[in-house]
Length: 448
Image 1 (cartoon, rainbow, N blue to C red):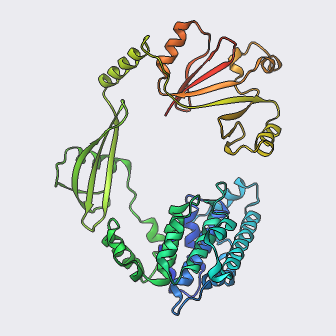
Image 2: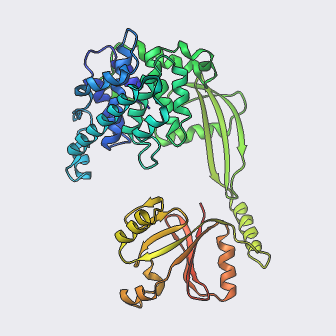
Image 3: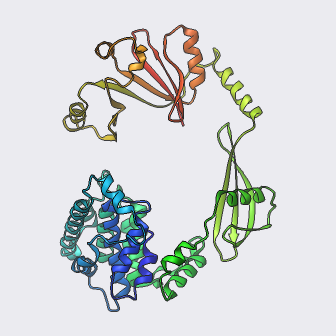
């Protein structure tokens, strides 16, 4: 979504290569996988063609242009002068298969574009949902992939080049797809094809519309792309500067002005306090810069020790005999398995459960079932037994995620039930384990 400025800056060039380099440089900052970068290049090339198109774009013409220009956007750009170490890191992360992965991704996207072209050939009979389904927009495992999104957006913009409003509606109201990304990118591509007059009054209702138009005009009127030396001279804003802004905001009043770290002046509205949890104070300010941008600044701090102590007292009171119902947020059963791969395949492929989380240490399915290795919690037996003894004694774990961890812990202590793993912290959250009357394991985890 963020590559439009690169394409706009390079639209006057007869060669797409420099624009391709800028797109990949921008993309790899947060997305190193070929699916993201190849998708960005295909979308960028379609935008580039749209900006350079002076006549009427034929129905489905944008798909044809993108396929015909594949030699311009499919090669992996060389950006060693900008990011000297990234390709070496990519090779290492992919076991020296990055280039082959890139090529297979290119073939994948070309195939998706061919699918789009076949759908377009149906003319008025083309059904958006069926076409987007064939592209993969409704498959939760791949719907947000860069290749899927790029192909879907190019399809929608090609189909609705003459009717852009309905093109955006088709993207925004495609249940099950990544609709915000789809609609944003479709709108940008239709804007490149048709300009902005078709938006009518809609553009006036967008926050900071004048500021956004001003930015777009500045980019469109730029005579050149900044050099590498100029890029490295950009001001680096450190945390101390941001802390100073918060400090000034804390002392400010409605209508005051403040100088931001980027040297812009902003007018202050606020502060506004927000309701939060028992241990946090949240306050925010609305700032309006001189050039028309709206900024929202939020400060989150922990409440004073006295307030925390009061909250603790309330929890302790709740843990008395008046506590009747544990506040459960989530619950699932952990099944210890001997053969991880075999069990995963059984529940996923044979039973047909939908996978919600899949890692080397656990697999979680819909319906509250989670597979873990037999050695998942060998500490339950205090390390006294060997592995085979642990496996023979192992039972399923019932896991409850709760907002009332401490009161429940104290109630279990009072009941005389055996606490197998005392209250401890893991990955920033507290938990403990106990045994029920039949020695089944109950694991209670503090909710976020």
